[in-house]
Image (cartoon, rainbow, N blue to C red; front, side, top):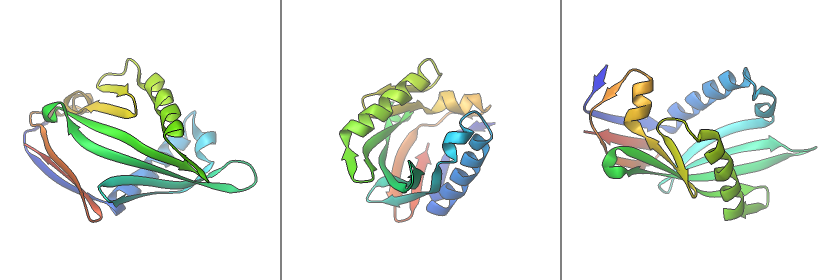
Length: 156
């Protein structure tokens, strides 16, 4: 399959259905036990950010977790930057937790094609990942915006 133009709008509901399916599939794998500690995962789109929320079982009481993520085209539209702006864990939050999580992510993606981490930003080479799925992506990511309760992407 070859894609040269694509305009895509993905709603919060679309993302949350995909999130449910992905977590259910991942729970069957080696991370299954850890994923059982995550309750009520949801994504909200607001103020130009993708906000992930859940409750994590850490001891006797569930702890609220929130991560604020900014998405932006990079490398003249050949890549997507996914920046972890802020992480809140119960009453704690800020850059220290985000930096620690991104360090773990950097180790996990080291050597993986199309993925790299610098600071608090994961850069995704769009064409390289599309090729892994057998898709030849000829366009570039011209625009990415959070509008209302939808994420809009425009490739040309």
